[in-house]
Image 1 (tube, one colour):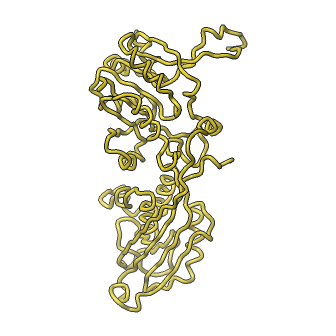
Image 2 (cartoon, one colour; image 1 turned 45 degrees about the horizontal axis):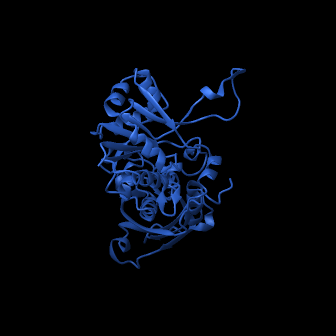
Image 3 (cartoon, one colour; image 1 turned 90 degrees about the horizontal axis):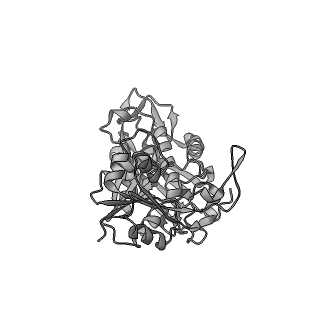
Length: 376
């Protein structure tokens, strides 16, 4: 077992990627890219521990993918994510890589480890082949180094260097600013970083996303309460009563959220929006749905279709179905034809038949975002 901890940084927001999916959640068959990269590098050596820094909104979901990885909430910057990750490190050395470097060769990792005692930070680089002009002056391209990851650092020196308030874009620059020693090793052009959407062509040797369909079921029930507004699917229903609930009680949206979360294996609505939190007291359920839709698209899914059944003795909902469908389609960003809404009664049986409340059942189906065939 090596005295090295491997850290993979996967907490970024992917704003420069300009796709409906965050790059760390591109699927290689069924495996998210962050996990594919982590497993690939981990297979090159027997690391003491593996740490993955996640975006705070995706941390709990990431934990579903492995029991052998230590997950930590990342920060707003790369440096903050490293600081958080180092709280899990108790080895002499640490190797840090960005999940966006997909095709790192085994030889690079091997050489980093072989040179670990030769400087405070071991860094791969590649040369520049084109002429370089900086501020209208041609400079010697032989003196230019394009720095890559992973980088291997002496843990104590990296922690000491992180006390600086200056932001650096890589570990070697940070350590160098703290009078640390750097050893450069030859990198590889295969370690190209996936940053912009055109960079996706550099990973064309990977499997496409799985074509499987993933289905989830949601069920929610709420009792009536007099003299409060009623909302269903974000549409105000013209009756003098609403739902007894912590939020606005939109039972349709709550059911729909659970079906969407079920389809992607992300738990239930209470895990995202606990009814013990004052933050969600009387909140519009439309806002909750918008957050879940954003989460689902970020983690690499697209929505196929939704089927909803409302079971209510009262109120009569037939005239609201089209408005609800149109509103949901706008929020979810799919065509209305892929949302079906049915309304029925319980034939005067049970609490629904006694007009004490209503129940909603939802089914949602998802698929992975097809990154290989998206030409947008």
